[in-house]
Length: 292
Image (cartoon, rainbow, N blue to C red; front, side):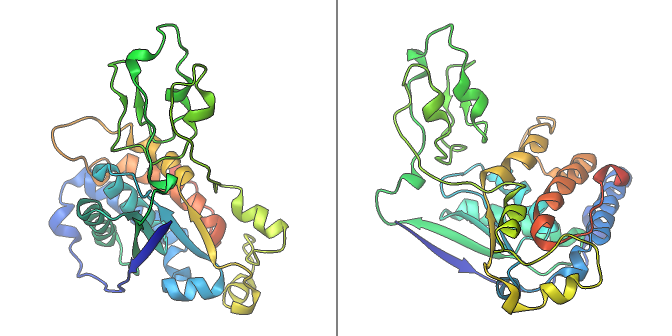
């Protein structure tokens, strides 16, 4: 059984852009990210998280109750805050919560947004959601095709150096369990999943009343709480995976790596995040390549 607690705030920070983004290339990239947010109508459609719940277009990013890679969590939080999520869920760990807030602060230095809620998930029992994959890589046959490594959405399995499961990255999704041809992985996580088709699927079932059409009645639909059959959508592994591909392409360096130091990657990651969050928020579709 998992308990969740949320911490909310709607404070707008002072404009600190010039102090941090003084490198010309970085400043240009940050400006591109800012323009992408504005052109996508994130600011014009933004409401408080509570209002989003009432309207049925609330979006939560689930970092994962067992996901503890603070560098990725910080960068994911920055990207998805810029994309307009209402809530970011993370592990009940001080370093992880700090990383989430650091990412939110970094996003709000790019453009003034309303601050998303921060939610922590706490395990009060032996809940599989909080478990991690476990196996001895030395037991793996040399000729194994390594399907576990290929299917892991968190890049938490590395067999080249015999490290096996990287516990800080594993969040217990269970995808590796059924694909192991030798039954070496010793746990099972039963969970559903959300992806880019979730919002459309809910609409087809008549559960999701917002529309993606760029018409004059979009706002009136969004503004009517009576039209919302659900409160919103929470995105976990899929949201992390699509942006994680961009994060994994950042050059390795000594110390933590901030995605805003790589402006082209920030714009690319933001475009992917906007595409996902926008299926719920009804953003104006804009291709991120136009802002590189």
